[in-house]
Image (cartoon, rainbow, N blue to C red):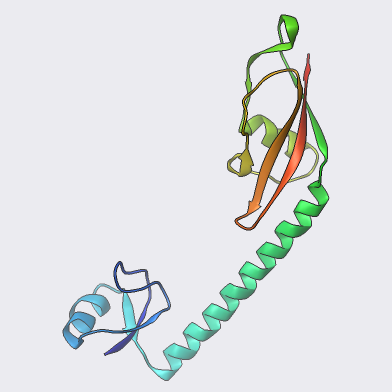
Length: 147
């Protein structure tokens, strides 16, 4: 029996895959639980259209990430933090601090997209990586100044 999976099924396939399974397993488990539907011409066409739309959506997301990467380039962003003697900060610069600094400049970057390799605990210039897409990331400079 050929079925189209509606959701990912461990050991069988991912959503929108066409799989061949035993009749009992397909009817009594997969279709009953809403994990699959019959492989008819109309359903196959629907899956084909969904895959095309999903591919186009992913292509546009990648294109937007590349544009954002070009805009960010090697720009520098300044953060003013409380610091003690010798330029040592009270605390450290966090992903949220970097995200907020980028948002002030008009770049919509979430804190989970910011990757800080070395802790920023003093005044100075640090390189931070921004993950815009699984395939696209860029480096920005964060200049930490004392208040």
